Amino acid sequence: MTNSQSLCASLPDRAAIFIEGDDRFDFLQGLITQDITLLQSQPLIYSCLLTSNGKFLFDFFVFDDDDKLVIDCESGDRAQALLKALKKFTLRSKVTLALQQDFEVYQVFRHCEECNDEAIHSALDVNRMDCFAGARNDGVYFKDPRHDDAGYRVYPHLSFLRKQESQIVDTDPSFRWDDTVSESDFNIWDEHRIRLCIPDGSRDMIPEKSFLHESDIIAKTAVSYTKGCYMGQELVSRMHHRGLAKKQLQCVELNKIPGGAELRSPCGDIGLALVRV
Image (cartoon, rainbow, N blue to C red):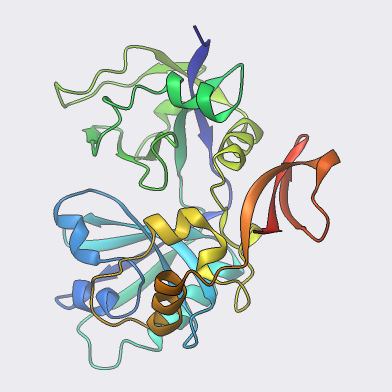
């Protein structure tokens, strides 16, 4: 049986953009790659903003917090650039945008001693990891929509997960997580997400250069192929239906990087690299 434990890592360099106003849903729907109406059936979506010719600009998460939408994005200059890009399209829309740098975000996940795809999958009970959103006085935690084995994204109001060990108390009787959650170094999460081939924003996707289909995760979980028009849709749709992607991000061992591959984000002895397929 695979040994695993539930870990919680603080995610550095995150920011939040808050969108308020009557038109906030329609405003985002016409810009981002994912269907904003999914928030009616799941608590968190993963999406991108593209250039007009369909190249990657930003990736982020979106959730609905009562009277505002919250975008969980990269911080610093990247957050400022995303805010500026969104403001270009406000026009007469009844929306207001505000930026908060240093937004507190955690990732709760299962770590396996034998870190391979099969071990990671068996350590996470997929029957328990459905579209669950938990809430408690000191935070909310949402199922990460990028991968079944990615765990949960946590947005605490208090720093309860900074303790050495803390119990997650669920509010959904169908959800059972009976382990304590131990604090984890970010590199452990970073290695985990690399093995799952999950890109980490501009560390792995080059703004204004990368195609969305260079990441299988983004192509499958950040894009709606049935919603109405959004900026850059034509190229994304064409690559999807014609299978035009020639390179993809893959987990590689640093001492066995395939010829011609472009290494993006390394961690330990592995990394994500853009490999010809």
